[in-house]
Structures are given as structure tokens and as C-alpha cells.
Image 1 (spheres, helix red, strand yellow):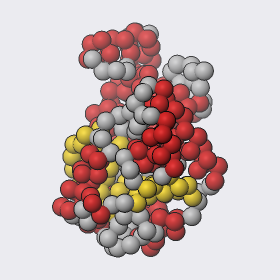
Image 2 (cartoon, one colour; image 1 turned 180 degrees about the vertical axis):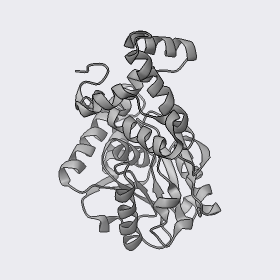
Image 3 (cartoon, one colour; image 1 turned 90 degrees about the horizontal axis):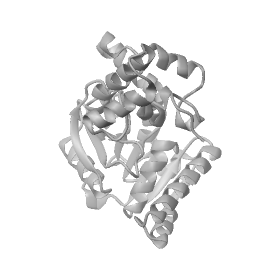
Image 4 (cartoon, rainbow, N blue to C red; image 1 turned 90 degrees about the vertical axis):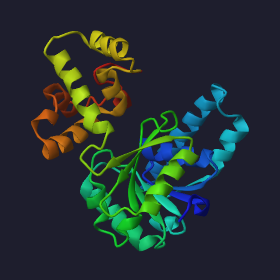
Length: 285
């Protein structure tokens, strides 16, 4: 399959990553089916899309008519069968291997044989996810960065059996969405999270051990390395539960250098997950 063969894109999961992927695909002219297990999650996904498109219009990055056309291209559903005629499907469900494998088994039963199946996993093995389907050559990782409509990068991850044509298509599709790509082998954490998670955890440890206050740690890293956010602020934006899950996966695979910071675990246990809950390391309105 080539890029010209893709007209209809499926997205499994209407959460932060899923609805972001659905939005950028629709804005690039694709018809999109966004599926989640309950209608309330689908509706919440559309609320996020409407808010995001509104911000783009307010910044003159889209016209109102362009935003409306993008919104109209997205169909919401709770029925996986509605993805049966999609040419490419991106899975963006919770970062749990059992859940992802279950989704891929269902997709393999639902979609056409030639449909390309991509996972947005940030740390889990593409090869293991693909092992439950009989078309592993058509499976790859497309790891979008958060927030998807704003961030320009997509990490294209090569599983053990990912075909060359599938890999080429993955790069081409991401670039057609206005993204830039880099390629990673199927190693734990790939490029981004393999480097990012220790950076965030060390920032948390530095704060917990009294090296500096939160604002000074974040200010030091932004001014000292020219990144847009320091580790504590970034963790809040990602979601502390997401950071913890990724860190625990890497710790299990790669050893103690990826051990999650104690304060990170305590924050998650307390339910302070960052911006999405109104409090993490910082407080949010």
C-alpha cells in the first residue's frame, strides 16, 4: 500500500493522543473514524478536538471554515466494525500490553488484510504487539508527540517483521500530516522516552532532595539547555501516571538507571497526576 491508497483513517482511542491524531489526520484531508469503548469517551474526545481547533482559529493558524471541514471529516463510534473499511488504523489506547494486544487481535479480525496497523505506544515492544496478528509485516509504531496538533515530531518504530513498504508508508503518512519523522529500532523506550524519562526522574529527585525549588529546577533546565519546559512542568503536562508507567516499563526492561523517583510514585498514589487533574508538581485552574 502507498500513501495515495489511504483515504480513510481509523483511530482506536479517543483520549488525549487519539483525538489529537484524529484531528491532524482530518485537518490534512483524510476521512477519520475515531472509536472508543464508551460514548462518553468519544464525546469527550470531540470536546477536546473542538477546543483545539478553536485555539488554532484564534491564532489564525486555521480559518473557521477549515476547522469546520476538519471536524466534519471525523466520525465517532463505539463499534470497532466501523473501522472495517479503513486503510490505516492507529491504536492509541492505554499503555498496557494486554490491552493493546487485544485491540490488535480485534483489528486483525475486523480490517482488510492490506490495512496497515500502527501503534502509538511510547515504550512497549512493537514486535510483541504485532505477534498476535497474522500480518506483522503491516504493523509498525507511529509514536506521536503530545500535544499532537502542536508537536511536529513522529517517531517511526520498526518491529522485527515490519515490512519495508509499511515503513516507507509510515514516514510518508506522518509527513503528509505536516510532521517530521525519525526512525527507531524496537528497543525499550525507542529514542524519546529512553532519554526523556531519566531526565524527568532526575529532575524530580533533584527537587525531592532539596537541590533547588521546583521553579528553579525548571528555569535552570529551560535556560541551560534551551528546552521549552523543565522536567517538572513537562511531567505535569504529560501526566504523572503516564510518566510513571513509562518509567516502570523501562525500569523492568533496562534496570535501575530507569527506576522511578519516589516522589513521582507518591504523587500518582495521591491522585495528583498533573495538569489533567488540576494538580501535580504545580497547581492548575
